[in-house]
Length: 442
Image (cartoon, rainbow, N blue to C red; front, top):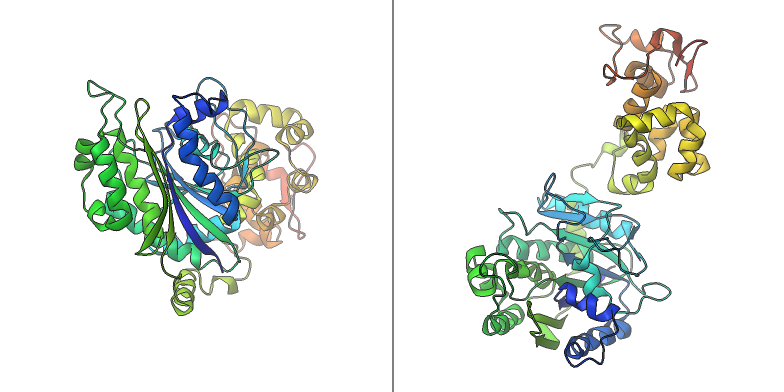
C-alpha cells in the first residue's frame, strides 16, 4: 500500500531558481537559501520517496483565465519546464505517475471535490524553483511527480478550510492506493509578500513565524481564517500559503517538525520545513471501506457489453491520438491532413498502431484504443462520414441495417458550412466495423 512518509513546505519564489542557475551558492546574499534547502535535499536523499505530490500555483503561465479551475490535478506521463517569457530553464522534464494520479483523482471526485485534470502542460517556477534545490537532476530526477495546481490568483478562491479538507481527502486517496509506494507531500508558496499595487513589497516576519508555529501545532486555527485576514497579515499574494494547509491536512493530526528555516532576502519570506507523521497511517479497515466507496459510481458498468468509460488512465494512454484528432478543429490542420495524411501522422508523432487506426478508419478500434467518441465525429466531419455511419460501424452493421433500428433515417454530423464536401450516400459500413468510401466519395 502507498504510504505518506512526510510533508515538505517550501517557498517557490523565482529568486531561488535564479540563484541556483547562476551558481550563487557561496554568495553571502544567496547562501542562506541553499543552507535552508540542504536539510530538505538530505531528507529526500535519505528517505528516497517514490513520488512527490507537489502542491503549487501556476503564475498565469500554463493556465490562463479562459478556463481557471480551483483544483487541477496533473495526470500525465511527464512534466516539462515552462517558458515564462525569457526561455525555459535548463532542467529535464520530471516523470509523472499516471496510475497514482488517476487513483487520487477518482478518490477526490468520490469525496465531492470537483477536480479538473490536465496533461501536457509545462510547470513554471511554482514547481521547478524549489524542486531544483530539493534534489539533483542529472541525468534525471530521482523521484516522480504528481502536480496539484491550485487556483489562488483569481477570486473567488478555495477557503483555507476547504484546502485543509482537501489535504485530509488526499491522505485517504494516497494511502488507499494498492501499489507499494512512498509519497512525500510538498506544499509551495509564500511566505508573506505582495507584488502589486502601492502595497508592493509588504512583508510581516512576525506573522511568518507565527504561521509556521500554527501550521505545525494548530492548523485548525489557520483553517478558520479568511482570505482577508491572510492578506492583511501576509500580503495578498502571501495568502497563497493556504496551499500549505493541503499538505498539513494530508499528514497525521500530530507531526514532528524535523527542520524549519526562514530568510527574507528581498520581496518574499523564504521558508522551508520538513514534517513527519507522529502516528501510523489509516487502518486497513478504513482504507478498504474507502476503496469500496471509490467504486460505487461505476460499479456494474463493467458488465455493460460494448461500453468503455473514458477514464483518466484511458485519457493518458490515448492522449497523443486524441490530441491529433482534436486539432482537426483548426482549418489549417484540416487542410494539411486532407492534402497529405501520412505527413500529418509523422509530424504528430503517432505510433504505427495509431496511424493504422486512423488510416483504416477503424472506428471501433479507435474506441477500444482509448479515443473518445467526440474525436471520431470530428474526423468524420473532416472526411465526409456521418455520425450514423460511425455508429453502424462500431456495431459491426451496415448503415442500412443500423438505420432499421432508428425512428428516422436522417444522416447528420458536426460538419459546418466550410467543411469538406460530404459523400454520405457513397459511403457504406461493413460488418467488420469499418466505414469504406465508394468511388467518388471523400
